[in-house]
Image (cartoon, helix red, strand yellow):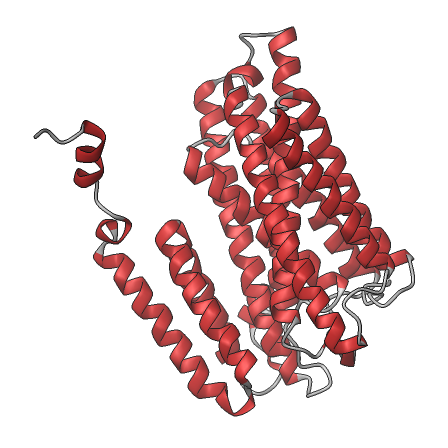
Length: 395
């Protein structure tokens, strides 16, 4: 009796666990040790929900490092720099003014400034690589764009970790995970969106999309600078009591993974339109040759919008559960909640038309860009300008 060829291929291909290396298992052990140390250090102030969040974060980080191996080195570097900065601080925030390494690199304001500047430089490098005449120079510029993006994301994440510690140095009134105001969440958006793009870059081995993908991050970086210098956004102060909840640790990150995914999806849509125009005007030109093909762009746009929709749904559900606990109702038709519903319906319709009607190409690319505009209007406009229960980001 012969065994079908496809069955033999399945038997010959190693399973996911069989593909894990000694480095992967060492990574899992390192994360486990870190989680245990954190638990032993802070268990006195942790409840069952905080313990569940810590365990879930550890499992997620292990899985992410196994699935996307560059995350292992990234996490180790972030942890090393963050712990170094925390050690330099000791028990006094004034150390930031005395220690040169803190003052110029590892304090949260310095790291955020470096991160934003590096994102701007990375965008310039990517755009130079996309438009350069010589292929050799183009490849070098794109490679530098990738390196600068990794460095910017690293310092941005270090800034969030160090800022968390800095808030505790300011006393109980300010102690909070740094995702509770507009300035902090812009830093979070920059880092999350950059990592989502870098996953595409390593997965598809394609860097030419970086200039477009990082345009959104660069715009957010400029707004971060604006908040920092015009409104002293980097200053740490008392936290709104309503935000002192374990829900914020899962609700906000889930939403911003969604927002970052939508941003990349929209920029992939912009790349689709740019390549469409380049094919029409100069089919053999630099832009047409260097951008991914239409099929890849369409598929990546769909994947990022689907990922964003999943995390937007999760974040909205978590927000409803938090709202019921804080305000006594799952839904209050607050401006922010209404905007979230509009964004959710928009992407639900986008995915429905692609999945059931087979819509592809230019109309979906345009729709993805419109979806990002709707998301941005809610992210900034509703938070800043419309009064409501979610008016924590007003300038």
